[in-house]
Amino acid sequence: MAIEFAHSPLLTFVLALVAVVFLLVVLDLPAFVGLIIAAFFVGVLNVVFVPDFGAAQAASAVATAFGNGMAGIGIPILMAAVIGKSMLESGAAQRIVRGFQNLLGKGNSDYALWGSSTILAIPVFFDSVFYLMAPLARSMRARVGRDYTLFIVVVGAGGATAHVFVPPTPGPLAVAAEIGANLGMTILLGIVTAIPVAFVAGIVYGRWINSRIDIPLRDAMATTTDELEELADRDTRSLPGVLESLAPILLAVLLIASLTAINTFEDAVPALSVLRPYAAFFGDKNVALTIAALAAAWTFYRYNDMSQSEWTDELTEALKSGGNIAAITAAGGAFGALLAASGVGDYITGALSGVGIPLLVSAWLIAAIIRIAQGSATAAMLTTAGIMAPQVPELAVHPAFLVMAIGAGGNIFSWYNDSGFWLVKEIGGLTQAETLKTWTVLTTIIAVTGLITTLVFASVVPLA
Image (cartoon, rainbow, N blue to C red; front, side, top):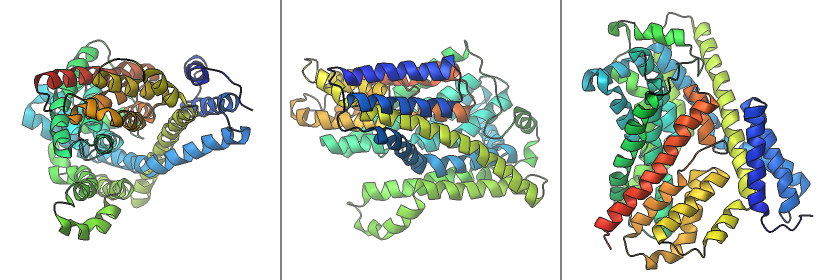
């Protein structure tokens, strides 16, 4: 029987925050163990405070949320582990890095990574982009010999910014549909908003924090720093060609983008419907990343002097590393899902519904608080869109500005209850403290500068 308590969702959130910090920071438990215990703890709190939430459900809900998380990220992370190890140890990532440097100059390595991650994240989910770009950031660090903090920040900032502002990325696409914003205008405003925001969060903040924190290159994704440094000194002629090196990234992006393109343009070009069944299969991120992994693994085999059994053993090591990352990421998602089940999102939106502040700021604030409370940026954006949709007629500006405000708020302060936090930490080879100082801060910068940019543009060019 749930206990009546006027502010139980807020109390649950505070106790959950204390618990996860105690488990992960004070006791320093392994991330997976600490997050699962924290999720069970929130389940017990839900039994006390949430009507019709039984004790058995407290256990099963954690397992279900963990399973749903693994269903969403299990295969992609495992294949990303294969891609990462293969691209790093075949020299493919190093070849791409050298191509960037030849094109833009060694002093602009951060711009190369920043621009690449921003563009890739428009048709592809953030997690897929980070899987593909993290090996390049690691190889760039091995090549340059410094600035890993900067490289990991620009990759994260580029991907995270496009993820919340620019359709056909699913989050802003769904929000635009919910509130009835014109898709073409949303894409245009998304690009105009994303560029300055990504620049501030990536280049400006990245260079600032890089001068204050020197994150070392650690062993991660089953690849040691010694192996990366050896590849950094290898003659370019012994590395794979540019096209072969890029093949895993190009395959993943093009296959996933094919389904996005059909979803976007099918109404205008009905003939594309013939391709839908094929794009639905090959454009699924599980299939696309598996194909990309096969391409990367084949290059790894061709450019290393090893037997087939040794090659298989190396891939198995990558999968072991990927399994640990997948488990931690899914556990973080389960913790966030149990917090969401506490009703904290509804509580927050109800508390803010009567606050008399401008609609764009109100939407940003609702999305931001829901994001901090339950972890998922996409869930925060969709929840806020549903709340704000009836108020769209009251807007004095184009509805696409509302999409931008919601996306900005939904990206704020990624922390322990966000699976993306653990993804960046584990794949990037960071400590919890380093992840908070880089990833958590940059997502907050994106949220604040995104709101400011939206308000400025809406004031100057309301498009109403």
